[in-house]
Image (cartoon, rainbow, N blue to C red; front, side, top):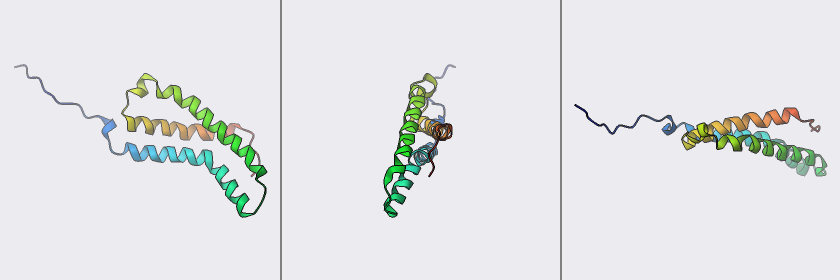
Length: 113
């Protein structure tokens, strides 16, 4: 008896937890990149100080975004990552973005706060 069954295997990409993980990882990466710039801007406005100390940190943020994009763009189109479900792909790339941003921050000669 040769019965053809139309049963699809369970896909981990359908797991409902991928979306909150992706939001958590990408928000963590955004906080690491833009947190110092926003903090210095708020403190400069609150204390009525010139924003000259903000320019080096803005350059650091731009460099972090550029290096993260340069690392994640080829990974996004890699065959193994492309086969993942969309929420799983965003969560895994968000985790890597959250790891690349502090690595770039640690490798730079940072200006004092």
